[in-house]
Length: 419
Image (cartoon, rainbow, N blue to C red):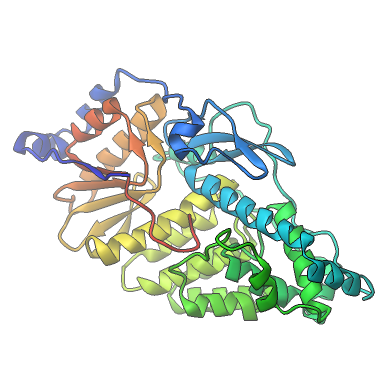
């Protein structure tokens, strides 16, 4: 999509930004409901495909879009463009893997795998199919806490005897290699894909077909590997057991001076997969020279829902991209209780993977709180660069621009394993 840029930096607006921050709330007396959209319009025809249908209309909460996706598991509620793109890619890979079952060599391999004691077993990864009726996302709740403190919500995650058996036989490594080379998470939360990867890995483990041979059977053009993933990270994901990967993740975070409590919370937070936690560590390594990067990791570790966790992951990836390609960052600072980047040239960078910003009461409160927070810093930024991955309504653009912020919408996510 074409990048839209709005710049309002007049002397009057900049004066209002820092001299009268509390008065800016007066601009928020008119609110709007987030627009309803047709899935076909948002997804440009990709609203339906093998094994899925994205239902219309698509609603939002002023920050993220909320999708209802019909799959073989029923109707799954997915919050956010990023998570939807992740699921649609997983469904594409699942469809391709299931086509393997029509190949005689694959069927012969399954027979051989069935003779082994371990065999292929049902995936232990559960799939959180959403049936909630409201459209308030975890990210919406997160922004509602700006200026009010932060709630922590962390759950545990454990393995199973089946996982141990797979590690011993080599099936777990085959599954990881197959997943990475197909551009999906080896620890996917989508149960049907996990089961399909297990089945294919069992064929490889039985010695019938190598992973390379399996990939050669995947229908041509059906799969394109995700580009942009560092080879060192790909290698770690394939060669490391789950526990080894977690140890590597912790080691990298420690090397980048992330506080131990944040590392412990991140590793224990089941809203991230082990692979996603490794991506967080890899990203922080890439811009560890930015002061306060631990604040981004600490906030990610506190994610209290799957959509908030993926938002924080995408935000870290997008912030690193901003630092490398747009403007160098000097530090991360807490503004109204939320970590915000400050550039070396004195400009604040509000980098957010938001789908569609509408001027609701919640967004008005969040952005006004951030704006007042900038005025309260010891050295307030000279201006604010608001960068988002999605759309913004006219009213929201008008209100945010009136605070003196420059706006860049429809910034694409960089290529890589994070959608």
